[in-house]
Length: 472
Image (cartoon, rainbow, N blue to C red; front, side, top):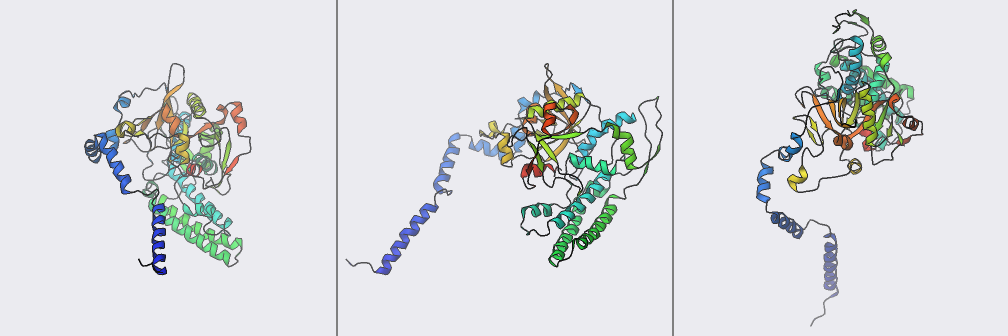
């Protein structure tokens, strides 16, 4: 028998080694054997054909709708606040602003003795856009030395002119610019469908950002960088006027009262006068409470870059158990105050009838699979986030006085939900409500003191907190 040559022996050794390496790489692969195992398990259930026919030919939500849960739903509320007509944000991401309007409108209606009043969202949105554009440019100047792959700069560049925001944006805007009724500055085609204007403005802003960074590399001073900023802001201002209309410096306000013994006196107002005289005395000091079980409870957090104005502070939020959020929301409604809140609106929401309830869709029973996750895990693994803001305007309570379900006023018009209203059950609140805005005077002394602690600073790219400033 001939002895293999050295070359042949080397080839054999290489084949053996590559085979071993391939076998090692095969660990964890989706192999034919594993797929056969899955198919056998599926066939063993005996319902494969039925489920294929059902799922491929129907809407999965319709299949999973829990009729037992649905038929027990009722619309009764122990307490319901007086509200204005349901409003519609249309094709814009201004839910946070509309929810703010829904919080303030009852104050205006009481003060003005009228059954219907709406604040001008386009007026506030105009100035929100200008402030965001200015803040973006200031951040670009501040971060001019950062490399382009810097995480902080990346967040800034990502959304220079978005619609999103939260309660503090709304509060800061009315404090600086005042308010006016919708009649003084109504919606335009572009304020109701913001996509194209946002895209055009974003192009202007990112182009200016590129110029500013190039100017900095050429050793231009900050004064020259700000001159480039001002040129861009002038263009943004002109674009906004073309798209939203010119915000009036003053307006003539007249309305009908529901009190026959009271005759309203029409007059001219500036936006700041209107805010001060009609709402200023009723404005409370509101604080933000969150429920994030993935973070330390009773801890105050501060989120970097969580504002829409260059001259305002970043937001702080206090993390409390869900039971506390419900306690304070109930106290607010009893005190005739509507409650601004943020949630993950897309989960377990039967929008045809406006029902938000755990297991309103029973996917576990439908598919015989376990779809459960803890709230902490859902937040940590980015399965839920605060993506929509609405307003609590009513509550149903048990004999003991505890909440059982909540009446929610949305900003999607009257064609969705129950003519624009939703019924949120208590267990849904626990799982998907992530923030409430509460009058600080309603908090316990113990919880008020928690706002005095030094906050834990959260970087702006942290997903949960980042979502809070981009509600749409």
